[in-house]
Length: 449
Image 1 (cartoon, helix red, strand yellow):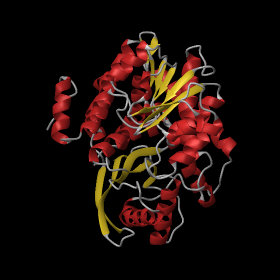
Image 2 (cartoon, helix red, strand yellow):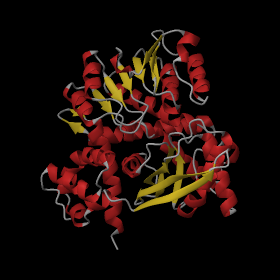
Image 3 (tube, rainbow, N blue to C red):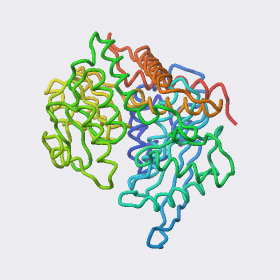
């Protein structure tokens, strides 16, 4: 099917329905980016001649494979594994692995598409990818998770390498899983090489990798507020989620003088009017590390209020930071936040704000920082880990943290440079255009065939 960018928007939907049917998450990601980059493509003969659009929305490779493994009862279970290598124009593929029942080609294509532009924004030579499995680790023993990771790597190892594709962790793939995956790769290949990031520091991992995404969110927020003659100090912040991104974002926010009044999980959210402290944040991490643990127990430990089955967007605050999952902040949530006087929304998760919600925020002149820019700190430090592995060197936490702050400041500056609109900054537009230009220029320069 031939598609012209000069045709109407509904033809973009028809194009996606034809090329990627029944993939709503992927469609959403492409449509949101295209709204910003269409004028750039229309004005560039090299981009049109190279058919950059169709090449950008078609993954370079989608790998699907069987993962057969044995549980503790001796029964053989079968899951699906995936790796979507979306675009490698500016470097080896880079992106996380996610183990969750919701993992499917649509979700992974959306994540890999977004990852392509996020990686470009860091200024580091990394292409975009994503992968994982529909395996659910909830309630599984360590031995079962180790056997699953080993079985998963039995196939994945064929498609990755330090100059080909370097995966990292994502939802339900943390330090434990990365360790099991790396150990399996080392045994299969007989090589010790940097084929995963997020490794333990004892085996060539980088300092600050666990903290990087959450810290980076707050570094970006700090730069954004500073550019509007404001400061994070003294601000009240709502955060959703209770994983690494959410808790480290909370930790850094508190360190910078803000008050964080909420965290959440799939069963509800906790409201702490006094604000989280380091002690409380440490407790949340330890508690949520227990299989099936609900955040509701926070109230028994520290007081506050528990809102079962609800999200925290009804709370009054200055800043909202959705750090849980995609499409968690909808149109009505955005209206409520606006009514309650929210000043900015910054995405810690990948695409947690729906398109309708973003329009509400834009109409109300509320600052909005998209995930591809604001949560790029994790992949930025992953890129630094790749460099350390290649040089067979390590860097201390202060050095990595300084590099992270510089990268987040550079990303903010890129968004500002490309996002000017009617005397204001459209950060989503700026991030989309800045990331797109780098990838598209590399694609044009490299030709086809």
